Length: 498
View 1 (tube, one colour):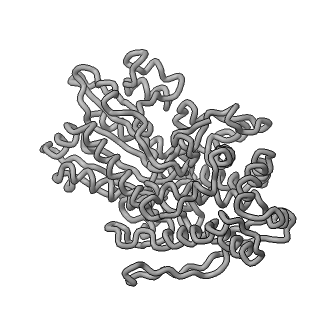
View 2 (tube, rainbow, N blue to C red):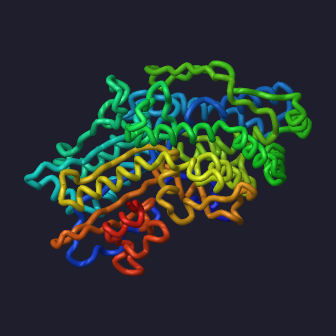
View 3 (cartoon, rainbow, N blue to C red):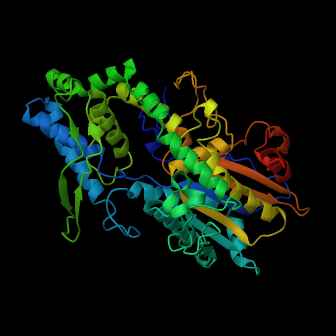
């Protein structure tokens, strides 16, 4: 089965492409004008988050080299792994707007994704932005991120691109205060323009985010985060993940991939426990101009103990390379034939479905209940507009796949929210959930808001810039059966009944 990346199978590492040409968007109804827009976006294409699978696989390669267990193709792998590590260690060096070069940064591809996303937003709603700057009443463009570097940088590149389209928008950009527990007196960890309760809710911690007061509105979000994290650490999830990785098709794909790189005896020894590797050791990389050096030491937590482990690590690098076209000359597709990539992509989707996606029906909403505060924020913004408060022209939020995915689920979007019973194992034959559709790099959800002179408010949603229906059951709020415009009063009643 082909995915949004054609036959490349990158899943949640798929480079971003808008899913609909703007020229084909449904025109707003006669008499309505755009007065507001809001965005939730994943950061753009990035490198590896840290030195894990690349270093572990390189150490395995070194072991195979010493054992003279490499094929001609396998010999080339070592140089490409070194290129991968160096490219990530120096990622962002010399790039305007990147303050701390290294692993986890956006690539040039990611920078471009957000700049172009902003350009298309502006072209879609030029009058909204012109009016916002010309209005005698102060209007604001709110900019908020998770606080993680790649999300912060995405927001800055997006905002800079908007300003490049219309320079007087710069004065409208405001970074609002973070949500914080009532009892918290020191907000140093919550600088303006960052918000963990809205945009990093999957990792709220007792040390940084504890909400002790049961009456605090953020208590529910904090508790939901703890319940989700308990699931993410659970023995049940670990067992399900292990079962997915030992499926016959995965083992066969692993042997096929590694058989092109290592000798049969080495692969056998890997599966028998005679060979293993981890992300240990220290490596130092220096920029071409000699002005920046990054010295990194692996933590040893990522281990390769089987053929499946090794092939999964290689698939991880293959998918990451798709987001590093400007920084990486190495072609990892030569190590991952499409037939095997398809198997690992399906496995990757299965793992993500249970760990981040809608998950198991018997578990209820544990995977996405923590997104309720974010969903409330979307509705609160439109509530203000519907009541005539136009102080905000836009709200722009930048976060991560772990935020986009539960938001799609809590919205009840078709193909993105359906759960499976515990007794059923996820597969492409029984689920439409796909990582490359739900959360490619720079994935985004946008709500455009329109009003008329009579004060009626309409909302149109775009998902990865494709017109998208709200959840099933809200059809009565559509202004016409085939329309993507929803009467806001009806939509709100459908989504948030009293």
